[in-house]
Amino acid sequence: MVIAAGLVGSGELIATTKAGAQAGIGLLWVIVLGCTVKVFAQIELGRYTVSSNETTLTAINRIPGPRLGVNWIIWLWLLMMATTFGMLGGILGGVGQALAMTIPLTGDYVVALQTATEPDARDPRTWAIIIGVGTALLLFFGRYTLLQTLCVGMVFAFTVISVGNMFMLQTTDYAIPVGDVLRGLSFAWPDEPGVWLTALAAFGIIGVGGTDLVVYPYWCLERGYGRFIGRRGDDPEWVARARGWLRVMKIDALVSLCIYTLTTVAFFFIGAAVLHRDGSDPDGMRMVSTLATAYVPVFGNYAKTLFLAGALAVLYSSFLVANAGAARLLTDFGRVLGALPNTEKAQQRSVATLSVGLPLLCLLIYLTGWNPVRLVVVGGLVQSLVLPAIGFSALYMRYKLTDKRLRPGKAWDAALILSCLSLLLVGLFSLTQVLTS
Picture 1 (cartoon, rainbow, N blue to C red):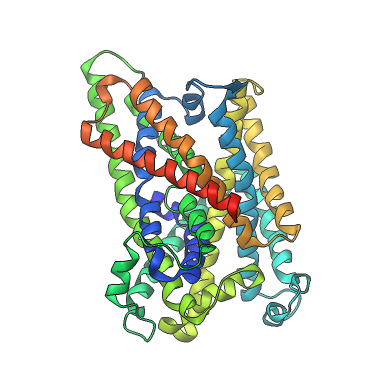
Picture 2 (cartoon, rainbow, N blue to C red; picture 1 turned 120 degrees about the horizontal axis):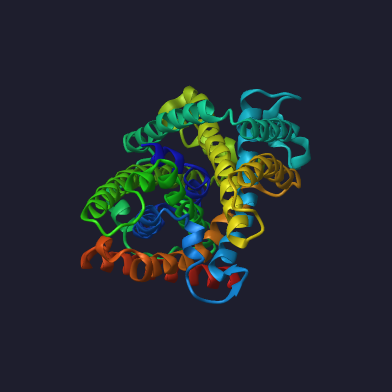
């Protein structure tokens, strides 16, 4: 449940709903595929790192190929991380918009939203500064655990509300016929090719996104899976322990898959049912206010309050957790690169420094005035482009690095290969769309 709640973030709330608003129900199959196809690579990356007690970047650095200090895949990952900070800047903008609609600081935000120029909307930037600086302090002093727990609880509640909204919409004038839903699950091509960019961006970040695939094994190691298994040995007891904890990991991943897939489909459905039919497209300074209208047909006057509370939880929990994880990932990158001493004191100092610097970097990116939705979409597109390299890493670990006694059966291998081929096709298709758009 914690994994599922943590994964419900900007991809689901912003990119997925925007894809539904632009394309309608016809691209539902992209959303379902984006949630389900990556779980096999996720589990395979976790299988090796947990059983070997190595971090993901250390494992990827073992893969042969061109090197410039570290493996070429790690440099692709670093590029993906760079665009992730732009995406987090967009998320911070969404938090600022939601707070400005709830608690205007410098004037009537409704009026600001109706203006044609973004500089008139001062409240979102003011709130973004407060949240960005506050997050840096929270992460530096390590006081974010209680807030993170509260956010996860609110995200779960908002998830239940969103799924309920999806089903209740079928009793209103915005109902989507069952036949249209079934056609949306077929591999149909959209009428407007331009919507592919938004759909592919959503594919890259929904569910276990490109960044999450690398972070997931760190979460397993943090929770002690590798420590409980112990150092690799030849005795049957080690194999039994490893298989038992790998089974726990697989159950975790598959149960969370069911939860976040249902949630993501709900966000897409809401966008397709309400926003697409009304001709609304959540973008720029009107992102949050437009998204809130998707809840009005069911919740009426309570829609704004429910949505703003949920949006704050979803967006801020993503911002908080992503920055905390990025500080640890970049610290591990410095260790693997050899630029950081392999000592606990040096790594703790690096995490503390990055915990302050990264939220402020995201704030700076947002304050440049870039469209927050566009930042999220660009970050998602780059994740789609890097997914094939992550899939290749999962295959290499499966066939070259994982202990033979822990390797899965033929059915799992077939699913893993199909999963990685799908990631390759999506990556190539995303590249062609970017080059031709």
